[in-house]
Length: 384
Ligand code: COS
Image (cartoon, rainbow, N blue to C red; front, side, top):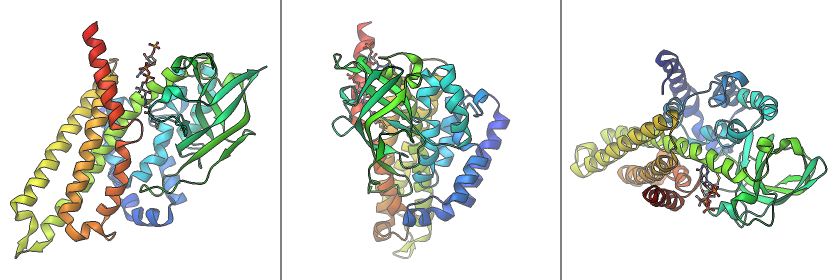
């Protein structure tokens, strides 16, 4: 759903300009230094990019899902690290509070997340539980008007920058599955939290992940999301439904960027006395990529519209994430191939993008998890 096309166009236009004029020129610097320059972060705050999906009453832009995916198509035309910095405040680092938080929790945290004053992060994955999220072992034990959290969270995006974490922990050890899990907002300065060293990743330099370790970390009981125990796994799943659509949109945007760079290269690069874009085997790779990007774009917009209409889009979100991220991997591969030797050296952005996009098929639920979600929903629907 697009609420006001004109207002949206202004936003998309300024984001597209920001990408072209500010982000793309510093991509290499970010990859080399593993840091996004502070002036870029300040510009992102000014543009309101940290609060896109936070309700207006808390200072955000409250984009609909359709508006958000259209935004994601644009921002993703620069290195994924930039999107990642604002990604958690708009997605997994805020949505637990937006979807299931109490009015007090929303009041306390959402305005500062929306302005970008603080960064929010989502702590679900553990050393022993990734895909099987419901088997997580971090514990939260009630002690008076506090909970005491113990456990280790792994690969936590933006943890080094975060001021608050949405932490999933088991409040009922007798229940082994998701129903024993609760979600908490934990402030980064709380005693008993420590961070591991920043992970050395294959790509996405400038975006940081690390372990977050909780040792007898005392959290006020009022920080239990929704004020109820046992709903934390469902909160996490709802957050991920939205996150998966967002990542699918990002995959479309990055694929469009890679293909645009590659088309330009193919039209300039001469072999056998003519631009390689004139060769039909190159054209086949360009055309396949174009068609697949178009298919993914349509799919993401359709799923976003359904979500805006209030439909349960668990299946559509997983279909979109699976198809768009796999598509993005295929496009990256073809783009390297079209660049030939130049695609394997770091003089061209495609070498970096090829490594960056590999993550899309893994985080916020692997392709295999999306397959499981889709098939299970199909079976459930057929049994109704
Ligand atoms: N929205 C709302 N509720 C949901 C839901 C969703 N999208 N998905 C599941 N639930 C509910 C179920 O309805 C069920 O509720 P009841 O117990 O009341 O019936 C409960 O949550 C447990 O669901 P389920 O039995 O399907 O859980 P499983 O343990 O079998 O696992 C998968 C489900 C595999 C889908 C889940 O663990 C998953 O998504 N794993 C991947 C985690 C992930 O994406 N990690 C990435 C790291 S975060 S960046």
